[in-house]
Length: 252
Image 1 (tube, rainbow, N blue to C red):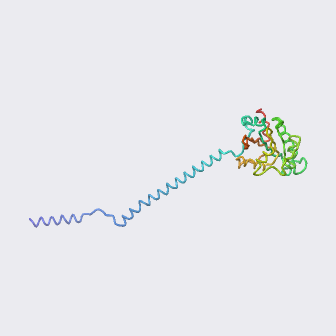
Image 2: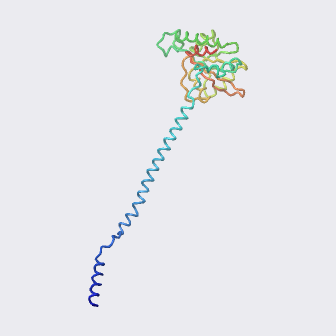
Image 3: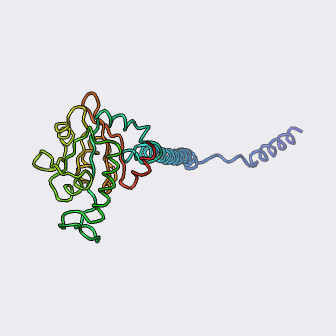
């Protein structure tokens, strides 16, 4: 009996010994498992980083675009809507607190239209348009205004057809450049408006100084109105293109 039991125990042990044991990860498997998780995490982290960078770039672009659209490119167009009234221009004009820069009319040497006279002067069309713009200023009233023009044929002719007279600016050259604001104020009399017939480049200089570095180039005959503040600073009120005067004057 004892021998029989011993034999059965041995057989049972052998059966247990031969029973398939669960797989134990090898060293390489452990290493692979250990390395796989960090790699997966790093990949996700990189993707998230790129995603956030893309979102940040789009957000920044949107902010810049909104700022660009909100920032005025050129001074307000006083010929649109009722801005001639709402801008306070009429009051400032009556008080003699304005400096007005008017670009000369169409120059002959850059046009196919017939010349009025010398090639460096105006076209015949330009003289007609100057006369119309002059009528608009006379509607505002010229009793408290002094008129000068830069020493060129086209500006002198523009002044002549606008106001029936030509008086050159006191300076030896056209009033342009970085110190243009100071020069204009030195020629303006208290309580009197100063009208200067000048050039697009000079108007661009003053627009730059007034905070409009990307202003569009002014058209022939356009008038930029600038208010002289109490502290002597200059502020752009707006601009009227020669063709907009009829609509603007209807506001009066």
